Length: 410
Image 1 (tube, rainbow, N blue to C red):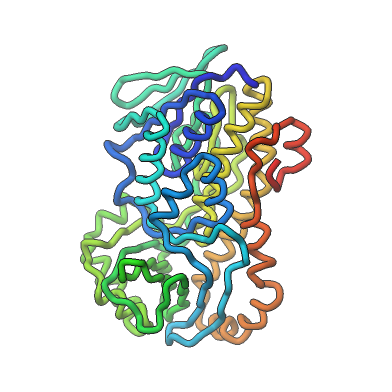
Image 2: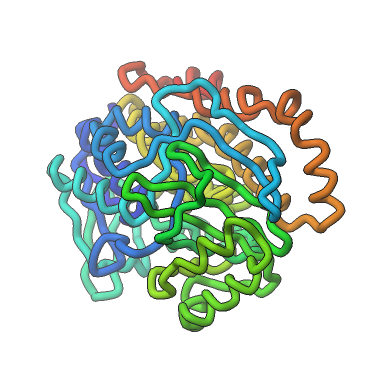
């Protein structure tokens, strides 16, 4: 085991609380630092937590709490803007099931679980810098305070400050020409069934929705827009204005137009441009290391962003638990994770790009999709191996094992 006994975890979204709990399980005292005054309530739209992510949460005892806020999903229906079926995608027969969740609820529950397990959380701590010595690392926060520990874990999202401290030349997120929105509606399409995700390639934009247990419809919209737009920039436009634009974009699409008609504008969340991380050259330096979206943020279209963050937090803790020094632990962690996450990032980017195709391509998709789903796009072939990935917490990590098995659990 390394001499690591304490850790600073920067970022309180999904990766941060999970990493903190996993480190504690590995015998390392972790403190979580969140830039915002509270947990990430109200930030983000819906996401799916894949079976591999839910299984990984079981390692730190957080799976039941997360399952309680999620809607199990067992199939996906793809339609065009007329509501005509393009294809049906049964989920691979993997357990536990895929869950549809709201990101803010997932963050809240993970914070609650972390606190219940004894993790100290400090809010209003925005990292501005970090300095290292031979035996520790010190975080410097915007409020003038500092904190020191054996290692610092950057779980601070796709615009990570820790990433630029590790490598000032680190790449920035790739901005895709699509804006992301979401909310919940009081309208439920007559044909909608619990446990089914619906995707629609509309005339102007892409729309997804699923029915919640409370009888409302959770939805998200991906609207082509070449203007790069941060979350802050997107929210300079009022929610009422955005809702008017969305209703115009989906005015001829079913059931999107009715779902939007029955959505309160005040409930709308405008995320801004969809972003993903390109290949990050340096995952760690000295006593600092990256997890989650800060180092491998895929497009939301991958369906694996939250699950990848969960897996990485747990694998990092295993490596620090089992290897003799920080450098070898970080190297093994990267070896275990890089190939797997980069494949998923590429798949997510391809899926996102398909949401901006023109009318001719959509016509061809309608013709070819049924055959594709039975052959090269068969969910078992495309998603099964991803979702069956499992981490063996009790297995000992060695440098050799990490290098020999980069794309599966050690």
